[in-house]
Image 1 (spheres, helix red, strand yellow):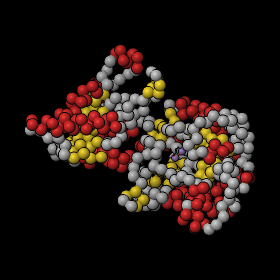
Image 2: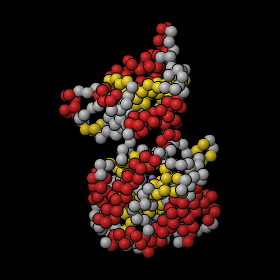
Image 3: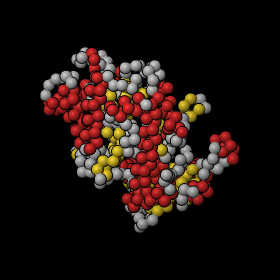
Image 4: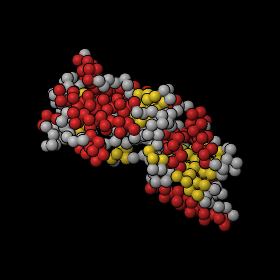
Length: 438
Ligand code: GLY
Ligand code: MN
Ligand code: MN
């Protein structure tokens, strides 16, 4: 399953409609980033640029110009020209003809002509829609174009009188996923679930964390995918480090391992966390804490319902986590008071989720004014409660220390209730132990 040019065009149509008459939008892709001398990071297109164009090459800028009526628009793509020498060294380019024939651009130009051509396009437009603040270097270039267009006024022309933050419009479009986008996220989730399943099946005491990471990467790579963020593979107390990515320690018999890892498929991300015993069997303490997190997670998933506040899953999760900590004697005091004062942050210091889409921490506002927004059809959110008992936390009985647990699934708000994209990897204690015993 892939998006087609018709999908990208439909997105441009919707954006152009919102821009109104006589306006111009400029959208650049990401820059290429060097890793070290002569070696660059593998290029990954900017999510919003790709969302509107389907164009995955570097050095590209899309321009949308609406006409005087606002009914029609011209879509121009600035991209790299075809070049036999460069293509021998670095690979295929769509070029100017490809931009028009394969990517449905009305006009296409060599990227080297951008500074020149853009001035003509800016002249006499009322509004410029631009993603301000993404990249200082490109911001400076746009500022120069505006200055130049303004300087042309003696010719009887004008420069745009308004500059509008384009991200707000694109982000809102991206936040609401279409059925096709959900399908792509389902594929990313299925592959990621397979990777977690393989990790549970292959882990052994004394294996290195990076070796377990390699098992995940094998499944991602075999399916033509890359990780959607740096994988976290933390054995034992490393599971208490929220963004642990060193992954360079041995996994010990008797410890849990926390894996937060997933891939992106066609630029759509998944985000999964599972925590399981290195030797296949939860200890009584691990089991008790795990069950609290799992109960919190299952209840929080059920709160991802159209019309519920974005924060509802968090409130649901926190209540169950705190009650669990009280029941296990890890915390003492009054449930409401602990929640009110956020004392639970000693053990649960992050939010319960975030929007998920082309970016793992996806775009879209979380509040409308002062209020948390509510779930609407097609919004995708992660649900990822956890408990982390620091290894040096002397307020807690030693038997609990160094246990870090998080369970994370990806959930779509639908008219039929929460749809869990990541259900293909087990998470109950019984199911994990049964899978690992095979
Ligand atoms: N993997 C990043 C996150 O869970 O937010
Ligand atoms: Mn997440
Ligand atoms: Mn995650």
